[in-house]
Length: 272
Ligand SMILES: NC(=O)c1ccc[n+]([C@@H]2O[C@H](COP(=O)([O-])OP(=O)(O)OC[C@H]3O[C@@H](n4cnc5c(N)ncnc54)[C@H](OP(=O)(O)O)[C@@H]3O)[C@@H](O)[C@H]2O)c1
Image: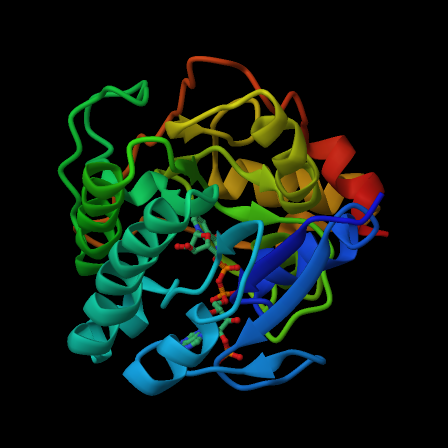
């Protein structure tokens, strides 16, 4: 039996790379990215010509991980962020519904304000950042055009992956990030757990917004300390600090279904 052909955008990024690492035996993945790095094909999703050339081809499934995923980058280039994070997923939803093919798109816990936890798929969303707004409006656009699309709302991606960017846990373990917030709770999410669960979600016909994230929320500092201890490293080099204003603080997620029951030791075992 031939494997389903899957267009994977953002294939050089963190989640795109994890999906390639984990699902290449189940999916025939066509990996595309902005830069063409890491054996991906370069397609600028902001170029109408490139977009058309890509979407003229036939796929059984489209998985969109392309994004400007750093809030600070969105502020530096709001127009580009709006076009890639918001208008591109909308375009993709129109395409997928017209071709009757499934679409998986990724959203973020940063669509919530972090003031009234826990957050479910139905909680009111009031982002505190431009990034959060670009993602929230994309979710609305996609669902409006294609209610059967699967939109996975997740949190800080952690775990070992070979990508053009690194995950939070890779940064902590490598000592690249030392400042960690004591007052900011997130559901740190094992990136390979998230990638690996996608075929199952499709098979079970999940659609609409679904929270898929680490099992429980921890402060960024508690997560970092636990991770370092698990790795046999000294956490005392961490600098415990308060988050800057307008950082959502209590982003505890509570999905309808507990899909990922994965905790820090699991992440650690998968990191080394
Ligand atoms: N990272 C997290 O902790 C986190 C948390 C919650 C939700 N999410 C969501 O999860 C998804 C994946 O995030 P990620 O962290 O894996 O992203 P990432 O590592 O920043 O990767 C982004 C990808 O988008 C591509 N891209 C950027 N501009 C492009 C353009 N103009 N044309 C085509 N491709 C372009 C990049 O390609 P090049 O770099 O090759 O140009 C890269 O492959 C996103 O929707 C993000 O919002 C992420």
